[in-house]
Image (cartoon, rainbow, N blue to C red):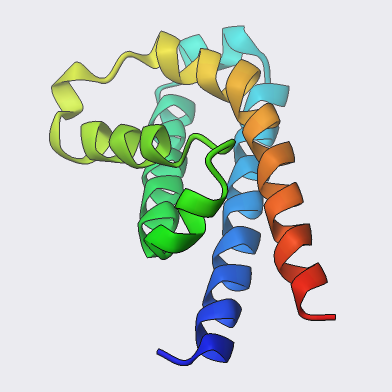
Length: 121
């Protein structure tokens, strides 16, 4: 893959990841009670985690190694649990990740995106 195409793929993937973190933020905005009582919201949280993990898997290893501040491995591993170990899904952990950790990861992803965009100039 050419450097230009790889950079475009990285940019697109980082933007996708930010979109998915925004989806998670909107889910959190509905509140913990809604999340706990609405099965559709909990299933939506699984779908968002799955999308995040798939997006991370599209990033080249050189990129993720160059940005170790982002929890790439955890994001990908969580996707694998949701996809393959669905009986082990703990919705409390998902909520805590969405409400607590994911906003910080989104900030770090924005910085990584900015770095890639700056390298283009």
